[in-house]
Image 1 (tube, rainbow over the protein chains, first blue to last red):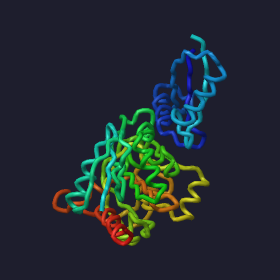
Image 2 (image 1 turned 90 degrees about the vertical axis):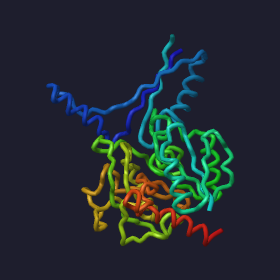
Image 3 (image 1 turned 120 degrees about the horizontal axis):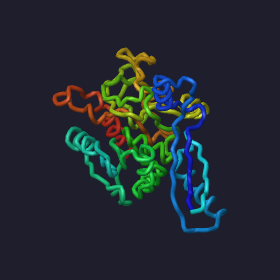
Image 4 (image 1 turned 180 degrees about the vertical axis):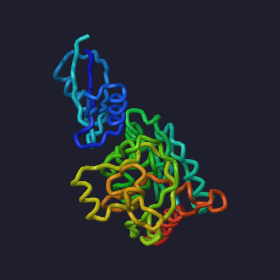
Length: 81
Length: 233
């Protein structure tokens, strides 16, 4: 199955990239969109089939390494191949 | 005094640190490859600047899991001195040896210039030769130097004297204009509560020779370490 980890900056953490994106989007005529925040998607694969176990292990990995929990939150999603 | 300088894939300020310690100060230094766990009994470990692992995922994230870093953590727990410079500071925050994180510079630009630093805590092994009233001119070269932590951590850093350097102007005034990257409270360097682990974004090792780079304001950091070691070993 596939594992998808979405990493986002925590609220209150400055995101200058988000601000730059917002500005450029506005310049393109998309002023109706605001509060841009840039995150990350990390996807990987496993041959294991136990959903609960995979979820737990992926969350462990995300907490320990894929996300810096000082400044980021994460979400783990599973998807069948 | 013996310095172990860690080298990760992508570290590029290891040789500047070596030169400063070995050739300018005349102390002993060697390199430790990130996969090695034997630090060879140093008095101080340097985590140098650079782009370890290409800054992939997050600056310093992957380097923080190096086998050598396990040894560095154990060394620090026993009271060993550890100084992280630039990428080294980022590695220290990723391992949790120092609190907080280094975010992308507020301006989004990679900033490469001299800044003035106000020594805030001069009672440390890293700063005993510096003076609070004498700002030092040290170069920075980074895109992710914006120091961030939550309010509680910031409070603790400030009240427990863990802020080591702040960005300031020529006269030592800590102003917004003097802050190159948006760091909270103009923080340029911090120490842990114990005072044996220090991280700073600026590069003191790049300012140790007046006749070569026209600046030796950085030599005081290294002289402080040697002085501390002489008094305590």
